[in-house]
Image 1 (cartoon, one colour):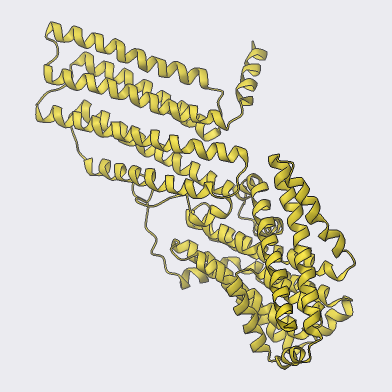
Image 2 (image 1 turned 180 degrees about the horizontal axis):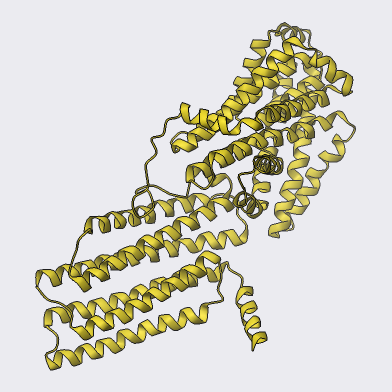
Length: 560
C-alpha cells in the first residue's frame, strides 16, 4: 500500500510538472509571438546568428521540440533555407538546456520561494485583463513546475529508502542499456526537458549515479528527435531534410560523447567542478550541446548536402504563375504551435490568393476584348486553386483559433474569413466574364469601339483599386483609405454612366442586342468586383491601428 502511494504521488508530481511546462511554453510562445516572427524574418545566412536565434527562441519558449517543429514548418513553407534551419536547430539544442538549469535550482534552498509563485500567478489570472492574465499564467506555471518537482522529489526520496528499488536501479549499469532507456522514454514523452527534469530529480533523491545519468542524458538527446521526425511526415522534401539534420546532429554528438564517457572520467571532472549532482547533470547537458555545436558549426554546408543525399529531391515544382497548385505554398500545419507566425503565413497565402484572382480577372476581361479563349485551361487551374484555398484556408484558420491568441490576433484572424470569401468571389465574377466572352464568340458578336473604350477605362480603375488595396493590406496600412474610397466610387460612377451610354448606343443602332446583353452584365460584375476588393481593405479596420493614417496626414500638413 505504501509503495502504491509513493507511485501515485510520483505520477501526481510528474503530472503537475508536465502541465506547468506546457502552460508556460504555450503562453511564452503567445506573448513572444510577434517578436519571434520578426526574429525569424530577419535571419540571415550567418550561421552564428542562426545559432543565437535558435538558442534564444528555445530558451524563451522552453521547448527545443517546438522550435524544431517550427523550423520544419518554415522550411516546408519555403521561407527558410536548409542552411538557416541547420544553424537554428543547433541553437535549439543549446537553448533547451535552460530547463535543466532551472530544475537544478531545486538543490538550492529556493524551492519554497519559487513554488509560492503558483499562488501569485493564480491571483494575477483572477484580475481578468488579457496581458495580466497571460503574465499570471506564466508566473503561476513557473511556481507549479517547482511544486511538481518538490512532490516528485519527496516521492523519489521515499523510493530511495526502499532496498528493492535501490538494488534494481544499481543493477542497471550497462551504458548501452542506459542510453536506450533515455532514448525510449524521451521518444514516448516527446519532451527532452521533461525527461531530463525527471532524471535530475531521481539523481537528487539518490536513485541515480552521475555516471549512469550521463549515458541516459545522451539517450535523451537522441530520443527528442522523434518529435521532429513525426513532424516531417507529409512535409516537403526540404521539411524532411530539416528533421534528418536534427537527428544527425544529436546522434553524432551522442556517439562522440558516449565514447568519451567510456574512455575519460567525465563524471569525476563534473563532481570536482560542481558541488551538487543536480547541477552536475544540468551542466553536462549544457556542455554536451554547446560542444557538439562548436564541433559541427563549421560543417553546416556539408551537413545540408548529406541530408540532400539521404532525402532525394522529389519536390513538386511551381507552375509558370510561380506557385504549386492544390497545396499551401506558405501555410504549414507545423506552425500552429506558434499562432502569430501561422497567422503571418496565412496572410502570405491570402496575398497569393489575391494575385491568382486578379490574374483570372485580367484573363477574363482580355477574352472579352479579343474574343479569344486561348489558355483557358490555365484559367480553370487557377480557379480550382482559388476553391482549394477557400476551403483549406478556412479550415486552417479554425485550427489557429483554437490556440491561445492575443486580442489583436483574434481580431485579425477573424477578419480573414471575410477576406478569403471576397477574393474567391472575385474569381467567381471572372468565371462569369469568361462565359460572356464565350457567348460573344458563339454569337459572332463584339463590343462597339465606344464600349471597348469604356471597358478599358473601367478596368483601369479596377486595376488601380486592386494595387492600392493590396499595398495597404500587405503593409497593414490604412492611410490610403480616402484614395481607395475615391477610386471605388469612380468605379460605381462608371457603371451608372456606361449603362446610360449603352442605352443611347442601342437606340441609335450602334450596338447589337447580343453584345448589349453581355455589356450590361459585364459592367455590373466589374462594379461588384470593385466592392469585394474594397472589402479586403476595410477588413483591416478591426486590427490595424489608425496611427498610420494620422501620421500621414500630419506629415502632409507639415509639408504644406
